[in-house]
Length: 463
Ligand SMILES: *Cc1c(COP(=O)(O)O)cnc(C)c1O
Image (cartoon, rainbow, N blue to C red; front, side, top):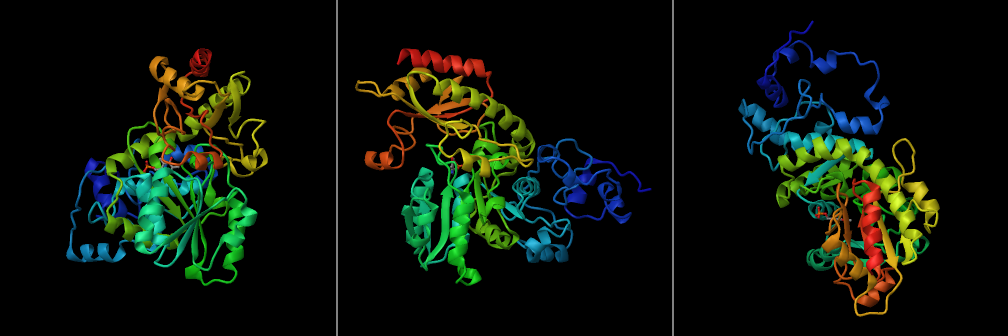
């Protein structure tokens, strides 16, 4: 029997690669302990709570909650170990080998972040994950790693405002062309793909209208173009999965090459920290890690820890409850005489109901329409729209519906996209993209659903 060596320093030593009493005796307790079920036999929801407590990134077999590490540099016990750390950095094979990593410097790699990355990759069914300081840093890295000068991004025409700015203001400076097309008609995409097209980029559900883009159909368009291309020029499908989270949608399983996600929203879940992630096949690990090292947008260990111990473990529970509330709120709004239309993938009246069921589901196949909705009020004849009045009334008087940007938090958030998040777009373009001045975006929280409906009902009475 392996001797029990229990001290805090044991874990720390084991993590950074000292050969401990236990490892000399033939592996960690986890390796010698026989499990009565394979880990993969447990539901994703259970996985997100436990993660890998025998993680090679940090063996916390003797903790209940994974620890957070704060050190910018790592003590190297020999020159040989230091040299090996540099050689192994950014190697996917090394990362996935099961060897205990050699950490050198926070910006290169760090254990708390690594534990989160293991769990996020698992949640998406991807090989690897690389996290970043924000969602935008993750999107910049995915595009930066994928694109060379002379190549082109073909993007859906409605995307997150800062992603649009990145594509129109910054990528062209590096000689990357950007064109926009309507991905809601994937059948017409083939003719828009040119020999320069390297990336097909979109979000689904779309912000703010909650329309869906068919990930598998975009994959088919990419495959058709790729039949005549070399590996290095293949068209890549990159999906921003922020609205759905991996609980509701796993784009890699539906044909995406890379997934980008803001951890600031539903994955973080509590509105306390920013973060972003790219999940991808292992071939992408090296370039994403080098990009992060050199551009420097690393996720801080403290922020990673929050997502690891609060965000991911509660994701399923939060989503399940938010979806129940969202369904009730959407049905309430749809039946209200002052409401023109409601766009929520869970509604019977949702225009893309069949597609919603094809691509938004949990690991065990349950339909998962998410926690976001968009609704349009019947117009009022006055200077301000009814939507502006309603949002303003809620901001001033409601207790449980908060006027704020961002989404996916435990608090219900409301905003008016026409005058706020999408105000930079010309009105004609907003209309062409399906937005309406009377449209309101709602991000469901965890409050009692009666309270949310009552706040909305009182506001609707006043406008
Ligand atoms: C918020 C958001 C982002 C950017 O994430 P940050 O963490 O704020 O940088 C990207 N895409 C979508 C769809 C978002 O909602």
